[in-house]
Amino acid sequence: MKEKILFIINPVSGIGKQKTVENCLDKCLDKTRFEPQVAYTEYAHHATEIARNAAQSGINTVVAVGGDGSINDCVRGLIDTDVRLGIIPAGSGNGLARCLHIPLNTEKAIEVINNCKDINMDTVCVNNIPYASIAGVGFDALIAKQFTGSTVRGFQTYLKLVLQDYLNYTPRKYTLLIDGKEVQTEALFISFSNSNQFGYNAVVAPKALVNDGLLDVSIVKKVPLALAPLAVQFLFFRNFDKSPWVKTFEARNVKVLGFEDGLINLDGEAVETADSELEFSVKPSSLNVIIPDEKRSEVFPGEAKIAELIKQIKERL
Image 1 (cartoon, rainbow, N blue to C red):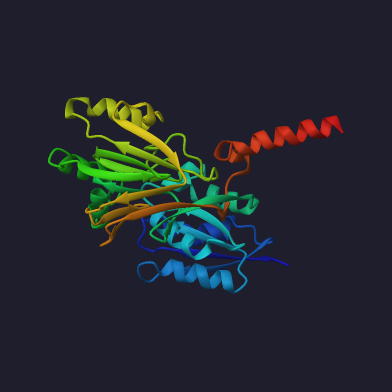
Image 2 (image 1 turned 60 degrees about the horizontal axis):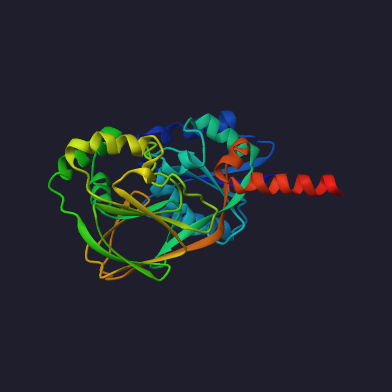
């Protein structure tokens, strides 16, 4: 019996490549294995409703076609179900797809789905709102809000927004409880990472793993403008945690007390909140996600250790 697979397409996501997806599906999807359906979102967060209904109606795999925001909407409908999540990147930054080594080329991403190698990953909740990749407060959230309102997408727009607001942005003071330990700090922004990057290969949490049961917290100070090029090198050369302007923590639970910003970045989407306290908590192994089989040991390095241990046990039997 063929597996039922649903492709949820955001028609206005990212840079427009989602418009070619149906043609690629006809050309590349393994029709001997899958019985495909396609649904287009019609309003904000419609994908959550579609994914949840799909999980309840016997769909085996839901594929998010879009950017990190579109993927996150699908995630919210699939957490704690047996339905697999596939990803065809069609956004601007494609942070989660890059972290999971999913090809940005549509045809190659479909081949990953054809192979259908899935594994459990963590998700995170902030005040009971789930997300899959990265949340942030401070300058990060401000740029997310402005980027969401931009008519032109892509890295150049993102960079332009950062440059026009950076000089005049005043760092905020924050009080955090990181697994119960109080940390007071001043920061340009603070990220709460399940995956390792914002997108565009800007790796803000190089050590973050999506299946370690931990949240990587990065407290980022404002860098003097003259040293900004050096900070950018740290960000794009995957050693941002070694920057003198960054302090990192690993935790299962983080609270932000006395929160006054009123704005959170959730996987690239700016979310307004009146809450004076934010609580981030990890939900381990709560999502089945399809990734390239040859990259499983890189995305989930613990698997390689387990496989080696099993091999050693077998050799001794």
